[in-house]
Length: 368
Ligand code: IMP
Ligand code: MG
Image (cartoon, rainbow, N blue to C red; front, side, top):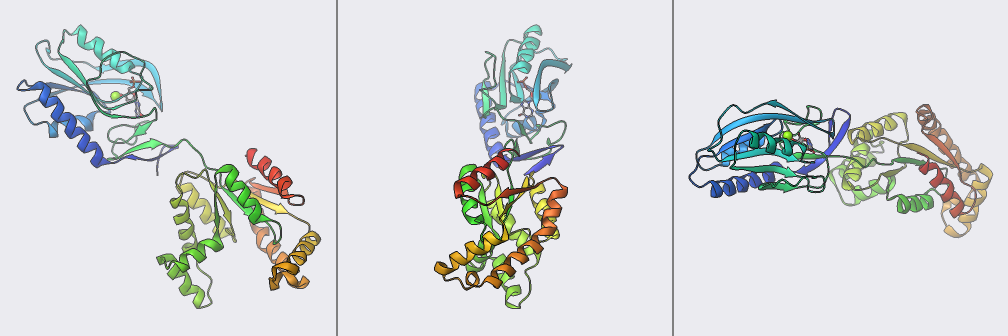
């Protein structure tokens, strides 16, 4: 993912695929021109790279001229087209091929048709590296098309977003879906796991349980898992840097997710800051810290109840349970404060049926 001004773009078409497409276009044009020497007319600014590479692959004599038109500001067509540099060569007897980087609405193309007809050029063809058929509102023929693409805004290979991105060799597309990233908290016995399962289904989120991520990496002996284990074996804490790299790998494994539920991370303010950095790099952010709130006495009785059947030793003993709850509040206080300062803390009443609590959580998420 890359950032240009205020927007984020994700990889779309690789440079080598652009190159082989241009090679094919050059061969097609050559076949149609035969022994005649064509005049290529590049439409600036966007087409400069396309012109250069098409000529590189053109196997025969050819000439080149440029015209400059502009119809875009930001990421939407203004509808009006200005001609900024005109033609200064008699092309009435020549084979002309217009080289466009991209045809969107076709407004620019209309101007080009007018310009060439006014100048008495009657043998001309249009070649466009990219074409957006669903955005196209005109009837003019386009003779050579590199890629037909959906109506999305792209940058790279000569195409820009407000001046930037022309130097990129790959094509990137504007990222339009924004993620919902939640940090989920709840004391032991609050039903966090159950609710995370409901939320991930409902919102197409990926649940990243830090404990599971650690176990997965260690079990599968990934580089990061082996590194983490070396600290654990010595009785040391795994450095935040290692943990955040594991989380980053999980995030990158799921590029199509609508967002993530972070569970068991962050535990410290430094970790919260590094999570912010990780998501910022992805053009995203933590949208909310959601804490399930359940009265201590209810938690104690829930866990004691569970201990009767679960066989978990840490559920059976009331003082152990109270300790675990106390540790939770001690650890989360600083995070609650961190997210409260950013107005991202949301406390949700965690007493009631699973469905009732899910409804409260959904309301909180829908309000983001
Ligand atoms: P049209 O006149 O709507 O066909 O737009 C043509 C001009 O708009 C192109 O020459 C580009 O300069 C610009 N344009 C259209 N779509 C894109 C895009 O996806 N990325 C960058 N520029 C674009
Ligand atoms: Mg253009």
